[in-house]
Image 1: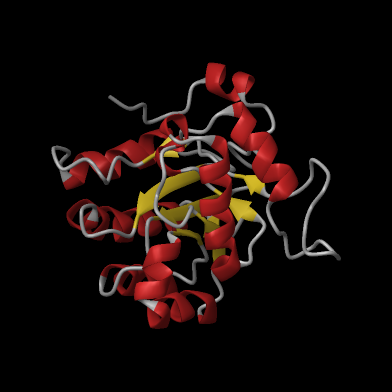
Image 2 (image 1 turned 60 degrees about the vertical axis):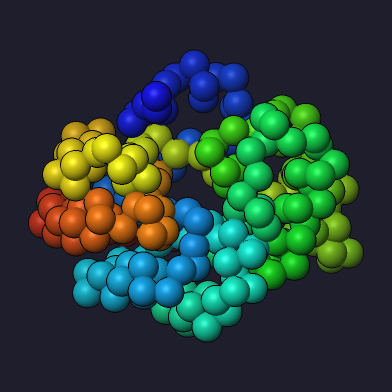
Length: 218
């Protein structure tokens, strides 16, 4: 069970997390979780380039180690990088210190200010820890010591591309029906999601480009 549109209750409970950007501008923020993966991430990069679109890739550290050349292509193409932990840990089922150290391990590779919790599940204690103890590239000392470290990014539209029971067309409809100005949309550049991603992404880019939207990094 998952919700396509993030509920207001969750946004209220986690007010320090980023759920969407400005609703006044026709800008959409595409994000891709779980890569980099050969062929899948390459398809995403090629498709984005065809529409002159930029996006944010929340990368798993272990996949960066396995596929460094794909990771470099993401950066070379001008997209933003986010931290998605080293081993795709589920925050609710992981103790805080293990979660912190796994994120720091990924941070050594991503060197980013952006973090997204796998599965969208994170404890408030983990939020505090990541905001105060994870090395941040903007910190002179290399370590943030105040509640201004990593920006923890959620979303307001979930495409559902990870759902193998979902049709590619329904994945497309999920996005076009729920996206608005400033929406942060989740896709996955993973093998599991590819059937739905490869169908929906080009159509979504074409649909919103025709309506005058632009696609930017976070």
